Image (cartoon, rainbow, N blue to C red; front, side):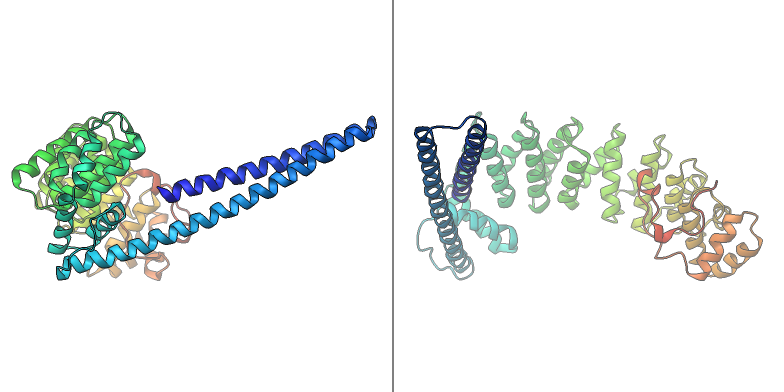
Length: 419
């Protein structure tokens, strides 16, 4: 806060110097123009000269004050850095060797403690958390959050401190902030609560309570797609119950969001909830569910028929993820993959060729396709795949069509789409 105020004062002085110089230039220009058309007397020129000298002197004084303020800001920054270094040494010595702290924990020490709490693990980290609470800083943060008219910036700073602290006593206060009218405060509270729940060892009952609170806040529609994804990622394994509830809900947007998080985690824990979504009427939900199965590397037997059926889905991005997921079927649908070598979408053709190439007799099948497939584009894709000109491994497919419609130039072989 001190550094911010110093920077603000420096900026005000800089602005004042700039305005003064600008006015001096404007006045000089106006006087010269007026003198060109109507010559001024000696008394007028004396007044102009005095005004110019006064403005110049003001600029010199303001510039001097500006540099004095800058020097003071730099000295304050160095003092804060030195104090943080001392507190870091003192807190680490207290946490690891029980060396008493040289003085009570002040604001600088509390900020350093929160940084150490976030970077350390195990019992040492928990001791730092308890010290923050014992010295009254946790009580102060909770008291400030309870104030109805606390400024937004101060409220956000308190929530950020609680996010770093991850204390069980702060969960109720963060729950309450999920309903704050300001969207930025709600978003900070969501991420702080998710981070705390994901890294605290809560009881089953407390975990259920927090999962219900997060579910209620998310389903109200108060958060963006990215914020929900980040919250689910921060929850990690503690968010499986919340993910299950979101997949069982009616909101397709939240289903896609949850499936994307599960796909990135390569999670197979919720396949029982994912497989029924293969028959969803929403194409993006079907695609995201296929992506989860593909990236987890474990496709349940119950999903085999649904995946084979989705190989003929009208949406190309669903077809693409179905091809990727079919690589984990036993046996893989080789006839369908042969047919999809001639699919209208370049990405589907590429995926089908790569899956066929990964089979024990894949090269033989592609050589047959190169010479005997009835589709020209299938023959081209088989030839280029065998020649190694289709670059890179078979990458995970996006769940939405936006990225599929922009194939990278280096991956284009011939014409990407049918004319």
